[in-house]
Amino acid sequence: MDAVAQITSVTLACADPQPLAAFYGAVTGWKAIYSGDDAVFLAGQGDVRLGCERVVDFQAPPWDRHVQPRLRLDLAVDDLAEAERRLVELGASRPGHDLDNDLWIFLADPVGHPLCLTVVS
Image (tube, rainbow, N blue to C red):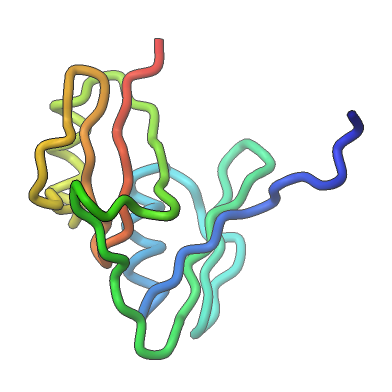
């Protein structure tokens, strides 16, 4: 089957795009390719971009072991413990549930979006 479309970006809602983009830029090493008052888009070496977009009255998505997120970012890392430590230093937090195991660790970005650290071999 021929593709109808390609994913060009994933955009995260937030109250203020600048700090969230700074967090993800520090995590991924991606640079801002667009930066305005209401949105920032980051890009790395691939074709997919990550956007952070201002939403009035933004509220973090609910997320616990009974309410799974509708979308999360999965981030490949070499060392789970070290990656968790560094992301928490950058502003991520532990969502307070016990879904982690030897293959992944769940965190929330600085505004509450879920993300998952996983070792890809």
